[in-house]
Length: 402
Image 1 (cartoon, rainbow, N blue to C red):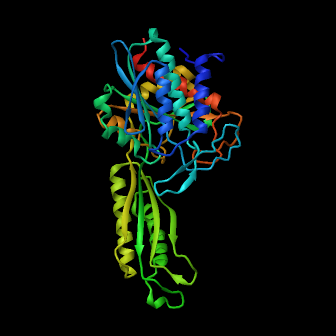
Image 2: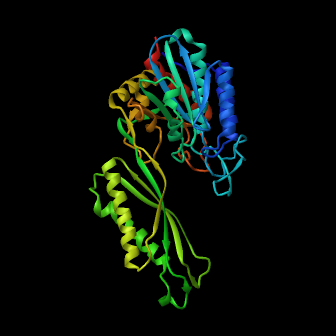
Image 3: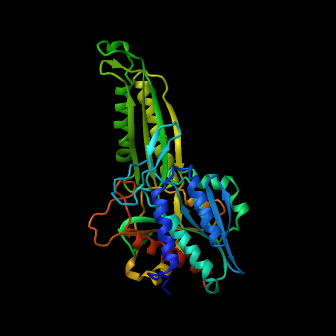
């Protein structure tokens, strides 16, 4: 049974209006105050009971008689990116990072699409109560980009306040053709660890290097050596990525500074490989500092993402439901992604299956759509929203449909 929204549907019009509003008004992770208020207003209009959780998280509980309980999650935060799409609804919003730095904002990862699709699915279910029975818990989660949101909602008693589901579902828009779906059984997305490393040296004039301990040279050796973890310490069959994304040191070319700071992002697919890579990172940083006669560096964890593990049996069931909705040729089983998501924490916290899939949001005629986190990322929102709503409904109805 197709859940396609008719072109003149008032629900479809509302979903598109939701998307356009959200796209133009992004907010940073854990600062989604206006976004949360907007979601609450829409749930109230639909007559769906709701409550705040985790600060800027919102939970809607749609009850429709006896039956299974299923949860569906949509994330809501934007990114510190200056939008360059040129769309007439492009974001011009600005926000402040934790250190007070003012930054431009955009929904560069499609979370506006996720929220609008979830609201659309909620509207269809609220209106079509005769076609299903049970309870659907809609989780509008903040802070996915920093890995803080799911943890905040769980710490705030999510599963004490909301009915406990038998599974947690979620989805993410990606730059492949709208109307198509990709999902991965078992390890679907990577664990992630972000570290900040502060190296301590001794400042000296650039002409007197003998009086220094140069943290720039030390950092260069560390960053080069870290690349040997994946090339020489891991089994080639064990996927891992070690990336240095920033390096800051010094103010003038003829002054050797007394410190350098760099950040690392580490991706792995299993807990044993994660532990091995992190141990190697710490060992190399410490050993290179000792080799330079430098003080012990400071290593600070910025954030961690859990593994996203898709329950194989439930993933197979959802794949079949999505294939029935979109056609078997539109649903593919894909390889794991090295990107990360905190979605998996929601089901893991109560020992129930997670199922997460990717849905297409690009114009099928676009040969090279911009990817997530690009300033040019812009789903073809009509097709993306139609796909997102239909996919959400297909997954939810697998459990509660009559």
